Every structure is written in C-alpha cells, then in structure tokens.
Image (cartoon, rainbow over all chains, first blue to last red; front, side, top):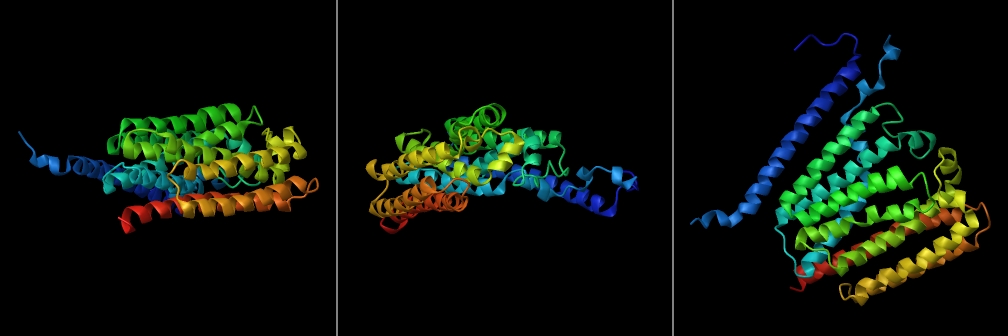
Length: 50
Length: 304
C-alpha cells in the first residue's frame, strides 16, 4: 500500500473506496450464493449414503 | 491539472448499477416470476430458495446485456436526449469497463442459473443475452426499421427462461407468454419513436417513423395492436388463464385498441395520442401478467 494519491480529489478518493467496497460485497454475495445453491441441491440427499 | 482528471475516477457504484438498466431489469424480474409461478401451477417444481436464486440470475443476465448494449451504443446514447445522461456518455464509466463488466456478469449469471436450475434454462438465458447484444444492438438496430420488431424477441424471452428453470423444458404455454411480449414491443416502441422522432433521427437510428413515415407507422401500430390483443387472449384459450384473466385481458385489450385507433386517426405531428399509447401499453402488459400471477397464486395456495 502506498500513501493516498495526492492528485486525486477527496470525493474521487471516496468514490474509489466505495467502488472497492461494492466489488468486495458483490464477490462475497456470489460466494455465499454458490454455497447456498450447493446446500439446497444436496438437501436431504446427504442422509442417503451407501 | 485537475480538469485533465478523467471523470471516471469519480464513478460511484451507482454509475455501474445504472449500466444494468434497473427499470428494464424490474420488468424482466416480473415477467420471469410470472413464468416461474405459471410453470409451478402447470405441475413443475423447484425448491423455493433455488427459484429465488434463479430469478436473481435471470435479472443479472438481463442487466449484463444492458451493460453490453450501453457499451456498444455509447455513440447513439450521447446523441439522444433520453439517453445522454447514461454513465458512458457522461464519462463516468469508460466503454471498455462497461464491456468487461457486462461480459463478466453474463458469464456469472449463466453459470449461476445452470447451477441453481438446469442447462436448458442456462442456454435460453445465454441466448437472450446473445440476441440482445449481437443480433439487436450490433446488427439490427442501426440497419433496419424492423430492429425493435425482431430485437423484441430478447425482451420476450425471460418467461421462457424462467419456465425452463422450473421444468427443464420450454412448452407451448411459455411461448404464448413470449408471443404476448414480442407483439407488445412494436406498438410500445413505435409510440415512443413517434414522439421522439427527432431524437432517433439525430442519432441516425432507422426507427419506423423516420424511415417509413408517421402515417405508415400508425397503421403498423394498429395492426400489431390487434395481433397483441388476440395473443393476450391465448392464455385463456390454451387453458392456463382463467375467467378473471379473460376479463382483464379483454377489458385492457379493448382500451389498448381504442387508444391505438385514436393514434391511427390523429393528425400528423400530434404527439399526445402516441404518448398515451406508450403509457397505456405498459399498464396493459403489467395487467395481463399480474392477472396470471394472481390466478396462479390463488390456485396454488388458496384453493389448494
């Protein structure tokens, strides 16, 4: 990490932070969704082991 | 120095969200939800959680195609008053970022739908995105006044995708819902094009009023309105719309035909009737799909 870009005005720096946060939340949501799909699809079948 | 700074540095997450065309997305979610519930009523079954995730995947896929459309059409959007405020013409989002954003979300949404439901639904979602971006945006929009007629297929596909998500197939009933939205598109967008004629002319988009003239467009609007109202009765004929649906479809159909007739008889360059038809066409489509939704929910949860 480097010091904050001095050329970037404060509002642009704030928006960059918000973009980064949105990407992080989006990724987390995708990961949780795929996990939820896995659990929902396995469902009760997990008990039917040979 | 500061004025040389690209405004892209000031982009907020909201600018990226705007690339997804949230208003179009909400219509897609609504028509897809109706397709899903109708498929369940017709005997299909899908876990509620998986159905909700499938609906999200369809919505994101539609949003992704919106972002790709805004990437490709940034030059047109900049020239039209209705679209000049979009994030790319405003300089908030560079075109290449919109393209990457759209491609990424396309891939993720199709993959997620395949995981949550099945490959048939995932195929139709991928086809919808391909049709909207490549067939409509890249090919037809700038080359023929039939652009929105053929391109309307992309907007009409969500109920088919949703039906396939529940049953793994796309039966006749799903294609009847497709036909309603498909036939709805020309009167809806040509009404808009009549009162925004100069906008499209300036951008060089060959919409029907610019190419064939207002009088011819009004005749075609009326012809498509008749076809639309007939297709609006088809769910009853095919047995998946009940008497409540028939009543609503007939009443709103009569209203639509009356306004389309007034558009046909309106003097040249009169815009009020076209504006009225544009607004009523949205209400018409909403009323028909809402009637199906309420009937199906009633049959599934109240009568059962």
